[in-house]
Length: 336
Image (tube, rainbow, N blue to C red; front, side, top):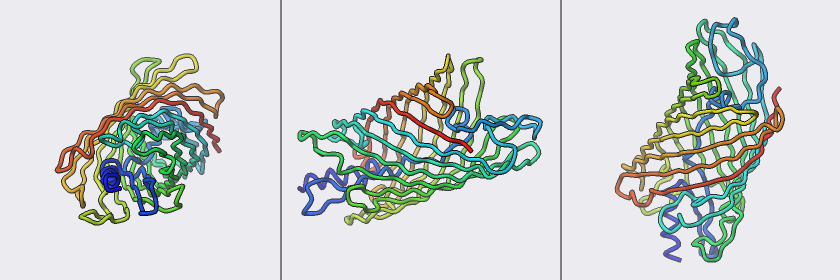
C-alpha cells in the first residue's frame, strides 16, 4: 500500500493527474487532465476546417484579409459532437514504471460556439466568442499484470467554458485574448478533482506555400490558476498552477477530398508553488492528422501523436515522460 501511495504522489506532480485513495479502496482514485488545456484559436480552426461556418465576409466589407469565415453581422454559431478511439502508450502521461502501460482510450465530446457579431474597426475586424464543451474520457482495457490493473477507475468528465475576443488585421494576422474555466469530475466517485481559470492571449498567421499546401503558425501564452485537494507533506492546493508559452506550426496538404496535416508544437511551462517550486517543463509534440469529409458536416479522421516532456528542477525525474497514441474518430458539426 505504501509503494502505491508513492506512485500516486509521483503521478499527481508529473502529469496533473489527481489520484485519491482511502484505506478501503485498492484502486487509485481520480484522474484529471488539468494542465494541458488551451483556449481555442478560431482563426486556426477555420483554416484547418474545424468551424462549420459556410458563409464568408468579402474584402469589400473592411479590406481585411482574414482566414476566418464569418457572417457579415449579428449572431452565428455551431454545435458539434465527436467520438474518438485511440490506442495510447502511457495514457496517463506518467514517468517510470507507469509509462509501460497502454490502453484504448475512448473520448466523446459535445461542444458549442457562438460568434457574437462582426465589428468593423477600419483595418481590422473584432469578433467576440463564447463557447464550451463537455467531454467523457473512458479507459477501456484491463490487465492484472499492470501497476494499475483497471484504468477505468480513473474515468472522468471534463467541462470547459470560455469567452474570447478575436481581432483580425488586414495583414492576415489574427490576435486573440480570453479566459477559460475548466472542471474535471471523477466518473466513479462523482467528485470534483480539479478546477482552473486560464487567461490567455495568442496570435495566428496562415501562409500559402503552394496552391495545395498551407502553413499555419500559432503562438499563445497564459497562466493556469487552479485548485486541487491538498495532500499534506508540503503539497499545496495551487501546486499545478503555472505559466506557459506555446508555439506551433502546421502544414495542411489538400488532395482530392482528403486533408493531411502534420504539426509540431513546443510548450514551455514554469511552476512556482508547493512541491513544484522552481520546476520548469518543455513539452514537445509531433502529430499527423488525415481528414476525410463524408459530407459537409460529417468528417472521418485518422490521427497519431507523439509527445515528450523534459523537466528541470529538484524533482525532475518525476516529471519526464514519453507518450504515443494512434486512433480514429468521427465528428458532426451543425452551423446556424
